[in-house]
Length: 429
Image 1 (cartoon, rainbow, N blue to C red):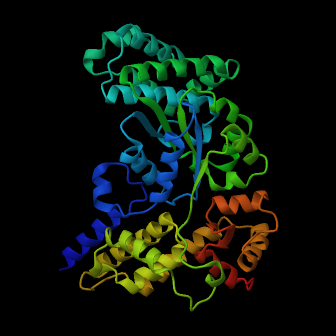
Image 2: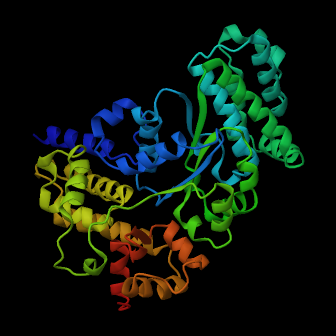
Image 3: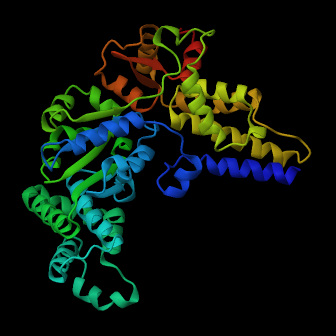
C-alpha cells in the first residue's frame, strides 16, 4: 500500500514537470482543449498575409501555455501542409544572458539547416557544402577535416550548435563581425531559406520560442533598437516576447510599425469577473474551473487530490497554467517527504498540504519585492490599474508574475493571489 502510494506520488511529481508539451507523446497524455482561438489567430495572420515575409509578435505571461500552444500550432491541420516549419527554443541554442539580435538571426540560420537535415531535405551537394563552409568559418571549425571524419558520426551542425551555446568567444566574434555588416548575415539567411523553399516546395515559417523568458534588460535593446534588423529576413517569423514588453512606451510603437501591428497575445484564463475578483463569496467561472481541473486530473490521480482542494489550488494560481503546475508540484514534494518520514501514514494533498506549499511559494515571491513594489501593489489591488503602466518597477512585477494581466473590453490587472497574502500581512490592503 505504502509503496503504491509512493509510486503514485512519484509519477504525479514527474507529470508536473514545468516543461511545455512539445512532442506528440506528451500531448497525447496531457493535452486539454485550450487556446484554440489563439491558434486560429496565428493561422490567420500567416495564411492571409499578402507577403511571404510577415513578422508576428506573440506575447503572454510566462507560463500561460505559449510553448505548448506553439508546438500544437506548428502541427495544426489549419495551417495546411504548405509550410516548412522550424520551431526552436532560443534557450536551447544560446546562453540566455548573451542573447542579442545578431545571434538570434544566426540561430535561425542554424536551425533551418538542422531541421532540413532532420527531414532529409535533398539539397544540391555543392550548395550544401557552401552553406556548411559558411557556418564553419563563423565558428572557426575546420570543415574539410570534419568532412573526412563524417563516417565517425561527427556532424558539423552539432559542433556549430555546441559552439554557439557554450562558447562565449565564438558568440562575441559572430556579433562583432555582423554588427558591422548585418546585411551579409541576412543575405546568407535568405540564401538558406530560398534553398530550402526550392527543395521542399514549401513556404518557410520560423517560430522562435522562449524569447519571452529573457530578462527585460536583455529584451529592451533587442526589440527597441534592433527590430528593423529582425524583420529583414524574407520569410515568415514568429517572435515570442515578454508580456511586459507590450507595456514599454519605447518598444510598443516600434513593434507596431515594423510588424504592421501583427501581434497576438495569449491571455490568462479569467476565473472571476473583475468586479467579483476580490469577493470571497464569488464563484469561479465553471468552464475555466473545469478546464484547469482536467489539467490537474491528467497528472494527479483522484485518490491523491480531491476536487475541492484542486479548486482551491486553481484559485491560488490566478488562472496561470505554470503557477497551477508549480503549486501542484510543490504539494507533491511535501507529500513525498511525508511518506518517507512515516511509512504507515496515508497521505493525500489536502488543505493543510496546500497551505504549506503556498506558504513556501509566498516566501519565494517576497524575496523579489522591495519598498517601491509594496507601494505599487496595493494600488493595483484596489484599482486594477497602476498609476503608470509604463513604470519600470511595474513592468518588472508584471514580468515576474507578481501582477497578472487580464483582458475584457479593456485590459485590467490584479495582484497574484499568493502575493495578496503578503500585502495583508503588512496591513496594506
